[in-house]
Length: 598
Image (tube, rainbow, N blue to C red; front, side, top):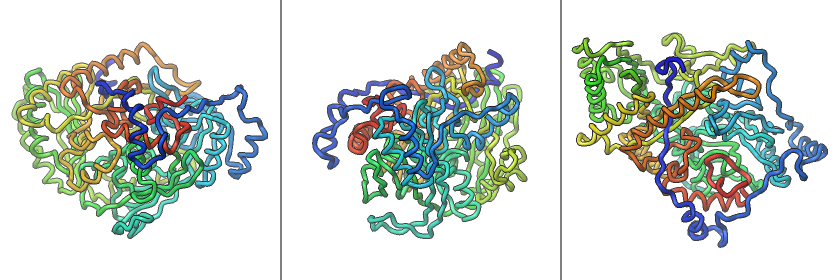
């Protein structure tokens, strides 16, 4: 299996307590009426049986040609790129190359779950009219329909064989607004940005922050699609300060299963608008445009890095105990985000970000813990010294600036003719084209940081790390966050546990790309990784038996996914799905309504 320590990477969990699906189905009709939907709408709608190539009813050539004419010949058969081995090694680790391929997704699959497989046909949409035409065609011919923007879904949400793919790649318009009022709401005007559904966060940060001098709450990985992140709830490095990406959604244009182009917000189709804010991508229709609030930009952002390993179990426990106490006392604030992880062989690693405070203030917060390590050289070996680096936050997504001041932090798209401004964080390279062996996540309630509970948390974290690395992502829990961010996030469909969680713990492992015709997967090796991941999460789940999981970063085999991902909101989401998509045209794994769709 090789050196496990070198192969560990952070990302995953589950929560498996009872969620009564029958109670949800039986309650749908009542809930639908309470929401103002027509009587009789329920989760027992007749599922849409999909037609596949070779089946009676699969569109004939003339019907495909008619669709092609309707969308301006932006319909094509989907094929995989023909790459030589040397090309594949380079190009399949380039997220911009993958983004340009209709037949590829940013993850190549999930063990015993799914494999990236090209659709039969793609409509490369240029506007909402193209999207509507594709939706009507898929509904009329009972086709499996797939939507892809950034294509980053770990669960394979933008992938299905023998399907019709709606590709929003070309919907890339970005417009800044000094003031924006969602149509029909009468709300107070706020600064905002409208973006096409094909946009990635790199391009939005470039316009809003680097060029515009403001901040928009988006994702940490710059090649993630905007629409998918928002629909999943959406965390960025600074979520404790600015809330979920979904909480910043002001308005969206979406084409629903009936082919209607709708502008939804707090006043128009407010139920659907709420569902878009964390209810899951690929479920409600095809978003074509989103408008997000922007914020005053903090002056400073910075990074903290540190790697230490302990020479004994006792020393390791002392270090972890001291860190947990430090986090509870000084770091659980809107200024801090990102992660600290424990790994096998008693290793402790810090990769955190801060904003809105100066470097000296950030360093002062860590002084006591640094002193503890320095005072005990026999107990602790410093593999990488504690370092702080700050920069003007306006330049955080300025590739030229970051490359000049933090060598090795960014990777540029090396292809001839590529956009010279396009780059990605070097730390995200490992995730490009990943085949996931396992991926689990679990929200950790702030109650575990009470002095009387910290010992249990420390013990569970250390026990977990004996099996696999376990990373605490502090930006993926809103406890300790700004009051405004937490308040806005209550109006989303996310599991309410996120409001009281101080972190999301992630445990994961991936392997080499596993696209058709490329790298073979060592199944036995991958399943051994999965076993270790499960063991690591079991130790943490023991202290949070009813903990929820983040939809975008959860176990493909998560049994209790409705409760884990949405908690008390699952019932309402089911009713909304039944109203807007009663035939189940939009179907994704771990998606609302998927239990009743074919």
